[in-house]
Amino acid sequence: FKGAMAAADMLSTLLVTVFTAFVQIGVWVLTPVGVFLALRFHARVALPLLLVYMISYLDDAEINVANKVRTWPSFSKGFWLFTFFRRFYRQHVHVPVGFKETQVILALHPHGCMADYRVILDGQLIELIPSLAGKIRWLAASVLFRLPIVRELTLWTGCVDARRSVAESVLQHGLSIGVLPGGEAEQLRTTHGTESVYLRKRFGFVKLAIRFGVPLVPAYVFGCVDLYYTSTACFALRTALVRKLGVCVPVCYGTWGVPMAPLPVPINVVIGQPLRVTRNPTPSDEEVAAVLEQYICALKALFDANKATYGYAERELLIT
Image 1 (cartoon, rainbow, N blue to C red):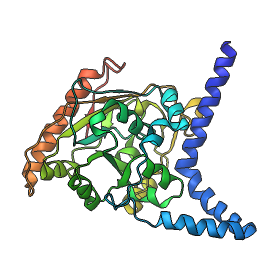
Image 2 (image 1 turned 135 degrees about the vertical axis):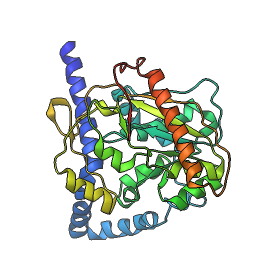
Image 3 (image 1 turned 120 degrees about the vertical axis):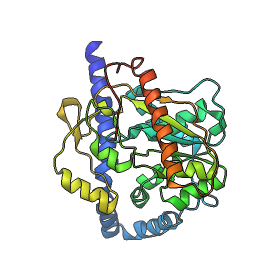
Image 4 (image 1 turned 30 degrees about the horizontal axis):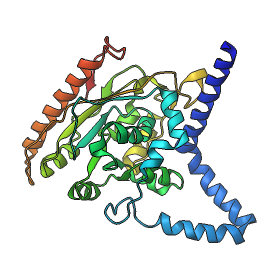
């Protein structure tokens, strides 16, 4: 029986690793190669299919939040692979009692190496926060919408382009925003065992909250920095890629020392109380900085209040 359980765990880890590697790296290589081979050897079938797909690929659904709605709540909630990932990561979401906000900016910290928790979180929130069900749009890097398959997964799980004009449109239409404020810069700096967030220069999401009078909701993801060991190999090059192209190439490894094979660490997403802000369409830099400081204090308090519960009593949160 123990041997069967060990084999099942091994297969589960392999499945997660293969999927993660494909999404992070494989799609960049396999997609163009696959398209080339299909057109080379099966052009009569591949070319019409490719042309049909291009209609969807070029429809600007990632920026047209009003007329090109591509979110698919039932997919986010029930897709078998996402359900499997939730069990594998033992991902649980903890929502404050009585949370009934209808429009918020939900900010997740830290980003972690992969942020797989974000993809499978969308379906969990549908059940746990009915007032926001199907109404959260996650801000995602523009490059994700240029990659076939990744584009579809990103759109179906409620993502839109992270540019400011799109975020403004989301709020103008009465929807909520989900964001990982640390972005690629924080992803690049992820270090195993270190609870660190890149936040003190992230004014954008705070300014949006003030301009539209929308509450800020902090959330901390316990366990995500322990899923992989990280390396600083080619750090300068990877930093340049982030700055020039907005692309982060994580160098990480876990189980058996295999790249992108996650360690058996449970994920707990703890959502905090809303931080209400006074609406001001033209906030000053000083006002934005003051609210950001309030938000940082709220995030720190959320971390400190829950760290012992989830096994991290000895850790301190570093905010840069």
